[in-house]
Length: 190
Image 1 (cartoon, rainbow, N blue to C red):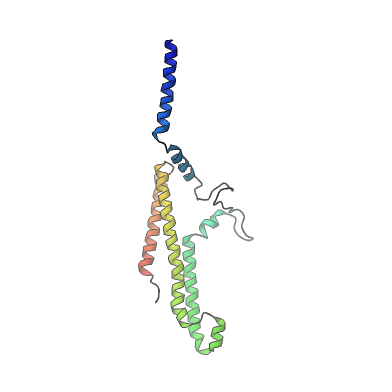
Image 2: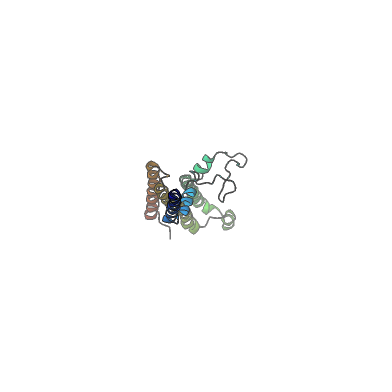
């Protein structure tokens, strides 16, 4: 009889402990599930082809690189900013050439070439690249902001080292500074 009472007591204690642990944090499974999501691939692209957001970077159009490095480097905010500088230089050259040739061309010839109006070339050619540049910098700011917030969550969950976390913070600070500098030094033409 004592053995039976002892066995029942042990069972009640184990069940009670299980209930206590499972009720202690009713959202434990949700939190655990969230951290599982955060542990996805380091570049943010899902590895499962059936997952939403999956990109197959191995198949590239003819002549293109097949490495994800192209995706991460060529299509980066830094590379886009370099390209924007080139576009600004192209537009400046076109404006200079138009100004040199304008007196020698008729109105019909200028119209057939297109984009030769003085106002378009003085205001538009300055503002169009600035709009794209500002958009790139704003998006880079927002992306690094979200990446930093994600890093904070991963750090809390123990899924990120202090060094990795510091890199995310530095990237966010750099994007903040770049957008602030643009905002303060690159005004639109009126």
